[in-house]
Length: 195
Image (cartoon, rainbow, N blue to C red):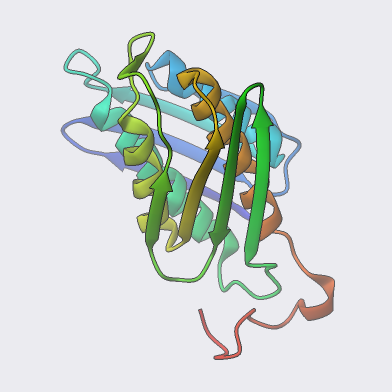
């Protein structure tokens, strides 16, 4: 069972997150931030993960703590669910079109954190959502999943499409990276023997 449950309780947020890497794409998301709910629902569907997130955050201030802390919890959940990493494919990538936007996501479940986002989001907001929080989410994820994560944007001028393309590409890349490779099911995918 490649599952995890993370409970994160701070002065700013209380999060309960449940993840099943071998699910069917079912999502039950309630973060108090509508745009983040939309992106996490897309993530679960395109990665084929079962994902439940309940977050009570200080959205009366803004969405920053909620978005960052959900990224933290998701990263922790992925790290816990993949365990010792034996048999992992480890790498995943996707170039994804979302209407006029074209976004590449590449990731490595390397044991090393690195976030390299090259998204050029033209507006400061999508609805009430601060678009700078996209980087906060993915940096928090990469730090806590111990993953190297890259985004490259080849095209796009609609902020919603660019961000949605990034989340869908991330979902597809992550789906690939967490797959079990039957040819090396008992091996850690590194010539060092450890990740």
